Image (cartoon, rainbow, N blue to C red; front, top):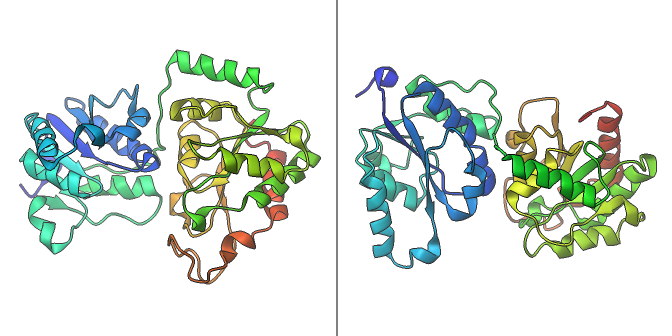
Length: 348
């Protein structure tokens, strides 16, 4: 089957194992598939840690979640993949080509197995491939669907809350003395040093913004094992009242619900920036090694970075060993960008 424009699948499987932000960036493609084939069910193959991103999504029929603790051996894994294959999918879209995705694609025996051009040794796994378009990551993924007659039209990532989650977020921020639209969510964490703006810069930046706008406070986001970074930011901020650091780690969906009430999100290039886009919160992202290909194309979402010849290197180690793109990005410059956005009425 060369021409897929007349292809009408009844069962579709989308493969995107990781990371959390990448799964969220796949939600526009899931919507587009469902809109193109309204009669079809769309299932998703992903990792267990990513499933919160897909909860309550009306375009997702079923999630096949890889739980590594329940799949201790290859035999267990193959048995799990065989269960998926028994669903008899007509169309498998592999956005990642990781080993587990390839296993599922192979065992599915789907009539159409679509992906981007693979290495030569994996070509027989896929019946159709297309070169994705460079640009925003969600567009990059959606462009793989072009042979199906699908075109990305500025669809943003999506997250769907329950009424209980919305109520929890309002009660939570109120318990911390915050009101909707009066605070900025701050993400000072990242597991890669080449994407981690220093905590002392974050602290100084928050202090400068707060000194000019004392009615705006910063709600600090952090995950398991990252509370120390949040405390370091507080240590370097001259105004303790400027920061609100939750006592306990909150879940991904709870974090996003809080962001939906924020005026602006400021932070490193990591998953929370994509969650902010999904819930309609404007963003200012501090870039180190990362390119601007992760920025949603809208004036509501902006990046700030040092214009060095070596960036964006998109590497996890710094060839210069000085992390100049992050260390030399002065807090004053970021603070001014935040104040400019606030003065423009962004998020109000």
